Image 1 (cartoon, rainbow, N blue to C red):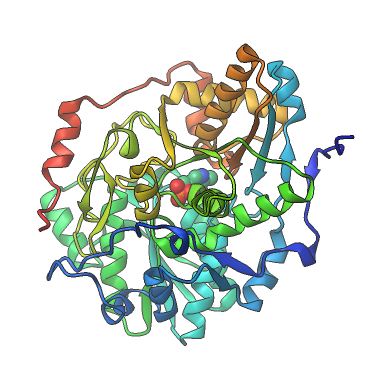
Image 2: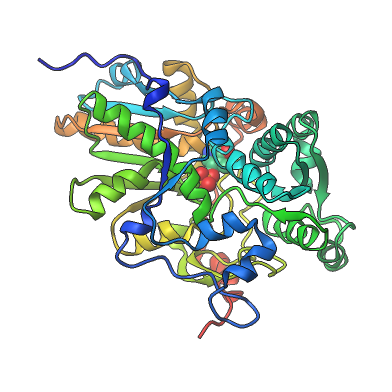
Length: 456
Ligand SMILES: *Cc1c(COP(=O)(O)O)cnc(C)c1O
């Protein structure tokens, strides 16, 4: 007889993963290396160690070790909010009338409200191990900055956050959460860095962008003794730390004999999706099992579905290494009505390569459809989802409705990356019926592509 699946599947403390999984080890074609923008050559450990902590730079360049030990102190911290529950969406299945079985892995169970704490705690740990004074970073809406502020306060590190100016002004609550955890928050562009002053001079009154805040944070790190820069997504080291999501999901599924057919995640820079799918992808790459993987991105910022697979700058100031990825160009900025997050111009090199090889699919969805799914999910399953997460919910519902038509009993797993309490201005637009969709034209996109660097 089939085992009864509980609403919430938890792992016990001793079932928690003790190692992260590095999917690059099982990839036949490795993601393209980061390049030094000055020389055009692959970055060395020494060069990378000037920007990142040495141990993190090693992880960034490690394409070979499939498993990397999670230091005990990080395992202990994880126990504060992990394992995160894998939930069977019985209510949603019933409401949709679908024969599909739907599961979601919920990462919003901590004060930062998202999966980002999984990597920030690891990055802060290695910074402290190295004896650093502090770290610098950028944040858009503030989820990453919050997660980093929490991690730094735990390890007694100084935390300098450059927050995109329009968010700094419009989203004071996340800013105050960061300050409560002791972080120093500066609106970007600012006059505290050279690149910030240059951008302010060129574009007076600009409301800022992620790419610009990254440039300021990197400059601040390299110009202050004892500081390094940290990043909350896109990088391979971040996907490595986020593999905790997939490893826990896989352990919970295996425990109950659940075999997902479709695994869905929202994709900004690719860290939660990469983390969720990594161990399953490993099985697929080793020929042990097959799964359908779907990355979901906003139609207004469509890096996978409409971007180019090319080397590009990771930041507006062009100070970071070049990464080969699906990209809209580092100058791309989503239209002002875009409300749902996931606004970075590029995608993780690991996911880009997997997508390029046809091992993963991608879909883009419009924001009004995303918020309709968010509202439906909130009403049926109880949790008010982050707009980012709701991209995955949209496609999970669409796939479940397809099963209703065909009668297929597929098993769907999706990542519910966080809660949406700080995104109520976007919900308000949706509730007032004034949210609109904008899909960039080919002409709009051409402007971003024109800024791609020439790489031989
Ligand atoms: C940051 C964030 C994302 C997108 O980032 P990825 O690196 O693509 O995972 C998704 N959901 C939430 C709740 C976030 O805070």
